[in-house]
Image (cartoon, rainbow, N blue to C red; front, top):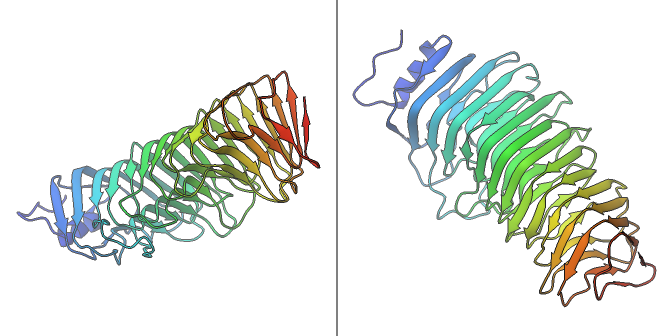
Length: 381
């Protein structure tokens, strides 16, 4: 039986609820003010029913502790957290170079590959370093959430070569005010799988989805209806397979566009931001864009020094205005680009296609006015 609800709910009472619960812990609802530095420890498998409770943490400095701390849960544990709001300290006056590694929700224990974390209908605002940190792999599900973090909205790590997969659905990842200079929506290690569906990323200083870290073995990252607004869509893994279906990048990214390091297939996506897509040097990957809409504000894709592999555009609808361009290949690029059955409309004052290296082949596609090739580059029509 749960302890009686006191007149004033304190951190000590919430900890008593967590400790005395068997399978389900029900929070009392309402707004609960907690002192700076509060941490609530989750010591066993359970479902936390937030019951619409708001946990409001005092302070104006970076937190020094995780709020909901499940770091002691061993492999095989099951944790579900739902219907809860966490309000961290305001970040309005913070220096964007501030370091902050604490989470609104944290479960970090290595080799917990057979465990499961489910987070549903949870909102996290303010100045936790990460909205949710899950380190150790395993099954991870985030659904119907609205997550902020000074560094990232979600961090999903596993550094021992084990397995893990994130199901991310119907969720907003939004940067708080003055977020860290390198802030990102989701940070995931490349060997962990990702299935993301109907996600909006807002105002991060880098990417909505950031795939990086070790081990760098092959994972699969499938994005469907993921929108990046005023930030870049993705840094993909160099050896993992990425699929983008009806994704979009728009607005004014702060540090350029997406960085496609490995093989990528995009289907029906829309690219209309001010950022420029880059690819990793020295990786001979295939990057395919099928029925995409491309309306860039500058150069859409730059293929620079030592870039290799292939880029194919099939059925693309391209509109170029102002100083926008579709492609620029520098003299050191060996990338082979093929554009098939596409429409390229241009009133741009720049070179719509500028092949100073590599090759651009147009098949069933008219070359836009002012396109050019400079040896060793080739433009084949």
